Image (cartoon, rainbow, N blue to C red; front, top):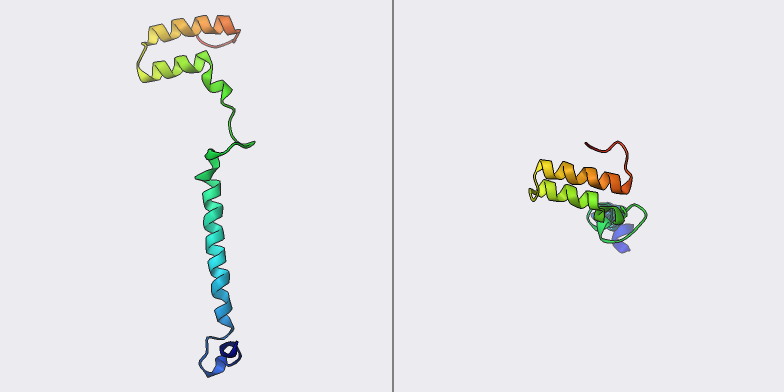
Length: 93
């Protein structure tokens, strides 16, 4: 504390106390940024989408069509059957 008391004589003065505060803010900001972006999808929480809808037959059919496993005619034919079976209204063909 001697250098803080004699900062007029060439010591660092009270400004030396700002460096730990600045580093704490930088580290805290980095952690906050990581929590909001990278680490957000790795754990469950109320903001995460439910995964039950991703396994529906209509979603699987859409993925198969997008990847090129089935052509457009087969896609619409199967989609109309699925819409009738699951009772969706206003879907397709």
